[in-house]
Length: 429
Image (cartoon, rainbow, N blue to C red; front, side):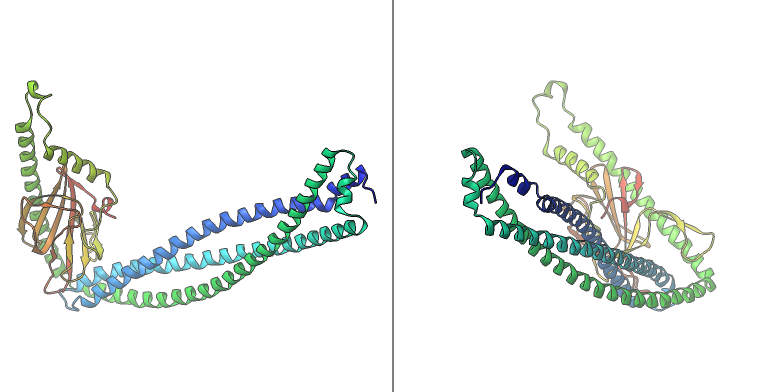
């Protein structure tokens, strides 16, 4: 049988061939969409899981701190503050778990839609592929590929026909491979959906468990608050003493910083070269280091390590409502971090120890200078450095002191820039 020009056009322009081409394009677009959605979903899922794990670790730490806090009248306020922090963390955990469940539902619905859509596309692709095979079989039965090539009117047309047959054969193979790979992907997707369903059931169980614990903790908090309000006179007396101690700490810090600033200015004046020697005298290494430390500390805002490895912030920076006394405000120049007994305290950045003092109510206090910035560590038991020492980032400078009445270990941490108080939570991770 001799192929005519119209036969070639009919074969090339056959609807099934064009349909296969466009189906492939649509399929690729769908796969790209699935990939983008999957990538975004995976990132959101990871963020939620990371947050859940961190909250669980924090809750475990707070639970341990609560268990070690004595159940005495003197420790009631400390227990209340720790319990309140524990409740806040558990409420966040329950909220995070519920968000994970909502996200899991949404992911399952989207994945199901994608599976159904791709399943329909596979059915269409298989029908198209079957039609291609039937057409190829009918043409081969009525003629041969060689006959189709050699019936060309010119060498150039024969070469084009040969190229077309080769591409057509490759296209069929790729189409078959595409169908197999898509089926495999769908099988994996269905398995993942089943695993996600099991995970969702586990999350629901976790929410119910955490909600029950939360209700019990809220009940304990209410009882403790009633007990504390009955003992308002003692609490006010403790608050007055605390304010006196806080003022003493603040004065000691300000005095030490003023003294260090004056010494630095004098040192800079003494080191200032004469105009004649500007181009002759090299810059001293300690001046270069001072500039580097100042710049580095400022540029590391929000990335500095915490002064203790495991801790819970129980009192934040600035003015705030007293935990139990109504219409009473307290001021905190730093943050208080409750931690484990005998926990190590670390310098958050390299610098020079410019002050070491004992402050009533705050035990041992260290001030480390970082150029124009200062970090303050108080309520230390043991101290491993002295005034004038150079310390490195994360160097162990002491341990946290423990209150013998309540068994509470808490470090007080402050950040200053010259004589200005800064919020430490803006600086540490």
